[in-house]
Length: 272
Image 1 (cartoon, rainbow, N blue to C red):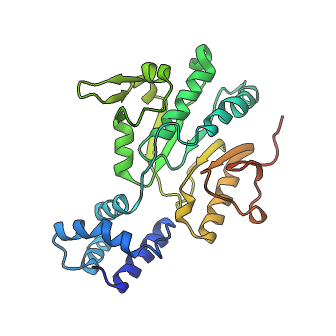
Image 2 (cartoon, helix red, strand yellow):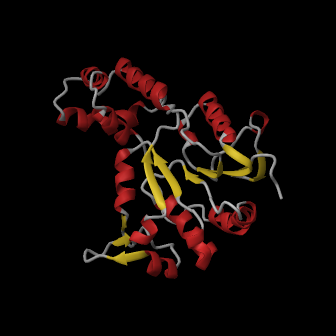
């Protein structure tokens, strides 16, 4: 069992590097790391952290982040957001970007890929035959390399797809010999997966039209959350949209966003 001192060391490191607040999760942290520490032959959590902080490959840190971050998601999660995207946002963007035909949508906590693939399916559905004329590539990032590898592989079980409309299942997935469902190459080309830490400076050259930041800020404390939301606001186009998880809240006194409905927010300006 990890000591309080070991717990505080790991929690402090994760908070400083990734903004993730594990300050009250000692039992969870111990449960997720204990076997890994034993299997790796470290005598203590301190010994592991000593090696991690001297590991210039970054592999130990990546392993730890993969173990400590949760990646629970599924297709059609909080489907009202995708309906709003298709009904309200895409018609606005189609008119706004008629000349550039360039849409910039970011799935910022992409996990194992369900969310960005859902966005891509909505985009294909909305644009139909006009789709080829538009740049609709979805940027999908996550802190976990393990989750991203699953997303890039794009193989899902029947259970994971059970809520998906039948025509989407037929059009965007191929059943494998093992009974899994493989995302088609055509849909894969619509999503660009990258590993990214939300605490890092945002690398975008152009402002974004829509950002999905769902069910990730629950891991951040108030200050980290405020700083992240300010960055998100600054990197959105005027009139751009932010989605957060339906169980999450924003302190409206401390955010410049305008609330459209609970969990959907908009940057002021640029409204047609």
